[in-house]
Image 1: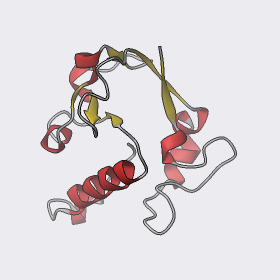
Image 2: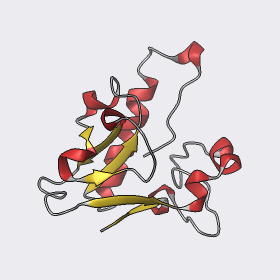
Image 3: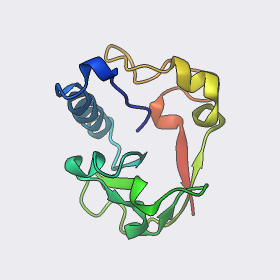
Length: 126
């Protein structure tokens, strides 16, 4: 679930929270059972995220443990999940991340050849 950002002049007005909550709602409606996020350790826990290491899930690069988080959308969905997250090349592509934007009407990100939605950007390699 990334990237999520709000211009500084619009921060502290609940916009970011609404984006996160809508993303969680859509994810659950689409049948996803969990979400991984690399984000601010003081922000995402308010939505229920906790360090992914709780389930033995690791980032593929060096990041602070408290910043690499997971959330179960279905209770127990990560109980038997362990491994290293594998990001798609689109997620790691600087130009792609610059043009990404929230699109409630059709999808979270504009489609590309290899990632048809925001939900195709990573998987967990066991």
